[in-house]
Length: 208
Image 1 (cartoon, helix red, strand yellow):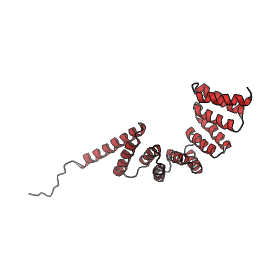
Image 2 (image 1 turned 90 degrees about the vertical axis):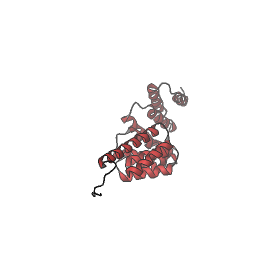
Image 3 (image 1 turned 180 degrees about the vertical axis):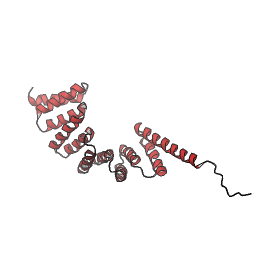
Image 4 (image 1 turned 30 degrees about the vertical axis):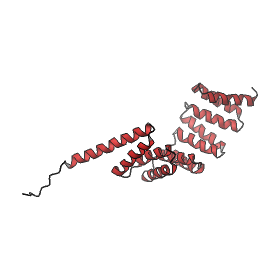
């Protein structure tokens, strides 16, 4: 006899818990694939997450990184843009979209996104260093040097910041400053053979 009561195979609360567990597992898998350089698998995991969990800024950002590492820049930009639409406070998404623009040679668009990232997180050295590269590619060495100044202010122990600023000074003929930067870089990382070569060119330019 039908009593009118429906007997579920699983309690609703248990089903929900399993759903959340599956989302967590997929998220961990996607992040692991990304860190291991298995970008196709990361994209599959993050796409599955989006299908299960709906719009999530962080997941779109992570999938965008995977696309970018595969050279699929349009797909990456679409994902970063979606992440930004969902959460405009994600400085990393602006930075990541800028990298995709940069890799395609769209330096002005990259600079605009780095501006936004810096507005959101003005003490992040990497954003200044990345914008400096875009400025340098545009031939704007003054702004490039200024951005490296800021990057070094916030992260003085990053050797490549000193080395890259040294290259800017070398290009603009400011050899004394270039030499000082290469010396600083070698003090932090004495095994960088490229910097020794750059330093030698500066010494030659100085007549030393």
